Image 1 (cartoon, rainbow, N blue to C red):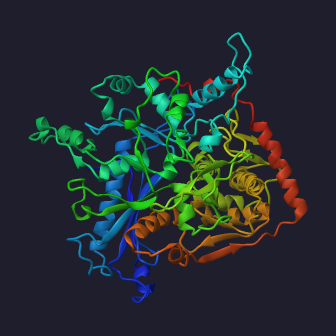
Image 2: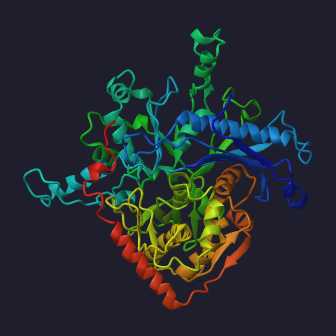
Image 3: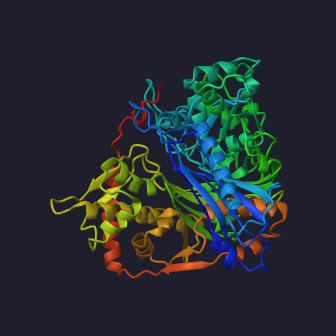
Length: 598
């Protein structure tokens, strides 16, 4: 079997040698599946929360031609890559001298946790296990007009839209009181509606009384649990077919018979869940899907569970024999997982993740805090039957993906680390600003009509300035969200805990501290997203007794202290605000944001 992408695997022998035998048992391991926008990873953590082994594999980014702003993933590729990462880690552990004492005839994994790219939406048939369509990725723009039409319907009902078939005034906060979310293409519910309206086989099955119950909608966590708890379905007609084509068809068949669940953090990103009841709300579903030929039945939506509890077990025949029977005991959306992994368990504690996008999240406790400054009110996590913990979040669509754009589209760098090297060749941006609104502006602006722009250019600017402006854009976007959280929560952050791939860039981290004017703190374990999922799973099966034990594992590695003078800071911020406003209003017709039909 050949793969387009390499699976990078490693065993961290240092974790064995530096971990006290008195503090941990080396045969107590927790697995974590971290399925992200750019890649899939499987990691093993020990009882001290240190990485023991990991594997990572990129997957195909599908940008359909003639559909600007569309972004898709192949669900079967995501599952196959997950299996590959899990198999590679197990094989690497089996051949490692440090861990040779582990008995792989019975799984040493006490549990598996899952964290995932949120809002990315998949529809599949439970009987065949085959997706109806590719996964629609969270930053995809095709549902921009759907979100706008839902907002306009409220305006027309209240007499604000005018007559004569005009577009009407939009109320993007129409569902915010119940969902905590504005109406935007970002969220899964709009993607469900698009799939129903544009995928004939899916619509036909929903309208067929005999097939309606076979339809499944889910985010990536739900898809992976379905696979882990299902079995491979062989086609009897192919049992004796050994040619390459038959093997390929067999390989590309997904599992069937799996469990159909999600957790509260992922469910809170659909526009379908009531934040108070923590359950699907039929009225919300009807509002979002109004105008479609068929409304998705509740049977097509996964059961909502807690973030930390034993959900189900890896099934016999799911694909990896040694992991059969392992509990699946934790699910957290990626940003909530990072909050959990950073040990931000008290109201007012926050983290910022620099990944494909940028996500600043603050724990607000068991009472949800409404936002009036462009943030999202979301579920932070829920442990067992305890009350849900809520959070305020500022989501930004492009951070690390901006650097990928420099590499893949402009081809002015060969890898991400080069961006820092080039940026250090100049002392400042010299008035050049880069607003990476490739998918519009997310928090705190929520402007779907915005587009990316580079402003302030002169003939003296070069790729050094462009790389610096791209890096600085991440810090400026964080500042916008940082200020909004301060206004909504009435809590002034004294420091900012950070994680994600962007934290490897020291220039960015120092500039971040300078712009927000508080220290930026990196933890020893950078993979806080995967760690959070592992903590949630381990907590559910008794590897760790409580949150206090987990919190004690957090340790600081590096601190960046502000050093920029106030005059320079304000000058830089003034230039950024001018650039932000220049990016707005480019996509005058929101329907053109995605040429929304197939």
